[in-house]
Length: 274
Image (cartoon, rainbow, N blue to C red; front, side, top):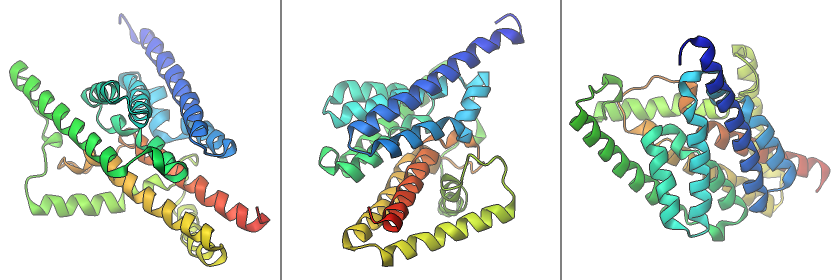
């Protein structure tokens, strides 16, 4: 890189990678029985989420979208029982950028909603946790050998007070942010209050109005959303630092987007009787 203008090449790579990620996600979602309309909405809205806007605009984070793509491939390979290659891709993802390495949780969420026979949540969670742990230990060894100074913000949780703060932070920041309408840039407080009030009212209303199958579908969607939110937050959970940055929430924001589209789909099916 000779001057700032050369960084535009990295931004072009990032934009192309985000577009490839959205396209690949659509193909996978549709292949696992998600209605194509829902899969298309998710894929078209993905580049508008703040994490992917950052990946497209900041030259310094250009590999992060590719990490999401690697994670997506890894999850698809895991579902297809190609464990060695899946683990290699996931391990590589964790070595580059841990929060983006769990982007595959978005695909796993849809598979569990549409085709649960293809995926065991317990095995999937254990696989991600194991690869995360091994890759983290390896990175610590490499940093120690190369004498790379550690950053205070990446130090692990070491006491009960840190753990309590972390749980409180996850439930008050990343959790609601994953359900925020990200396509609205810097919404006002009043618009967010109205939005979350609508969301809070819609789910209970649907629960009582839907038939038995619809209610079970709604309960399942809520349960799976929380499960995969927790799995995708593994890298955020173990460090002491609680600073929120949208670039750390690619998996959570897409999981929230999938859940919202699912909720809207249920509402439309109730209103139109389909």
